Length: 116
Image (cartoon, rainbow, N blue to C red):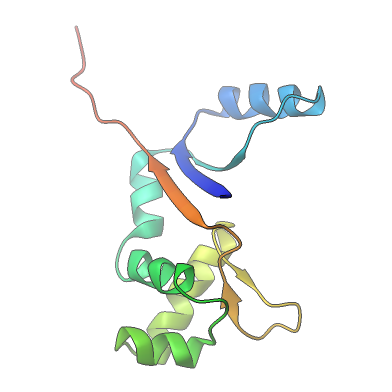
C-alpha cells in the first residue's frame, strides 16, 4: 500500500531529508507544510471530502466529483486546484480527470502545550 504523509516540517528538516534522499536514504512520500494552519487550510472546506471521493475512485472529472459531493462545479474545481497545487492529487495526462496516486493519505500534525 503506497501512503502519502501530509506533515508539518521546518525548512531545515526539509533540507535535511532532501540531502538524505540524495544519499540514497528512502524518505517515503511526503508533502510538507510550513505550519499546521497551512496544512489544515489545504485540507479544509470540502477538500478532505474531495480527497476521500478520489481515494474511492480511479479517476473522476470535476463534474463527476461535483455530482458525487453535491457541490457546485466551480467550488469543486477551486478545491481540486488547491489539492493539485499542493501535490496531493493529480490530473490525468490528457488534462482530464483527477485522481490520487496513493492508496492512503496520512495526516501527521501535533498540538502540544508550550513548556516554559
